Length: 153
Image (cartoon, rainbow, N blue to C red; front, side, top):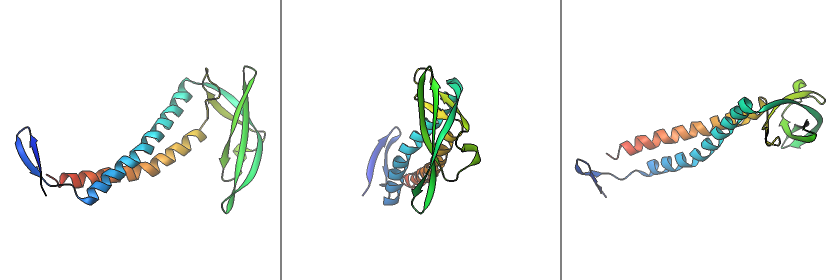
């Protein structure tokens, strides 16, 4: 089956894309969604770090919780801005000395909404790692799609 395409220089016959090319394009689009999401998370981290206010938050509690066949350490922290208390938690795989109970960590927060905050360093590692995990298959799928699409002409 041939598809006729009328281009600028006249009509040219092209072959349909192969099944592998179709699936490469499908997975390229599927991996594009998380790639865009993680790029936005990384951009938001650097924007908040550059334009946000900085303060210290205190780790007030550590809980050891089972996770699959091992444990994770959930660290709870809080900080005060204008008499209002804000906080959250993060998980670590090992009980690092840097994040022991009663230690302080650097927080960057939005002036208008202090509930929107990031932990210096920690808020960057997860989206950066996940961007690498989804970005490599995305680039591979795009490359395979371009190779298969090029065979159509």
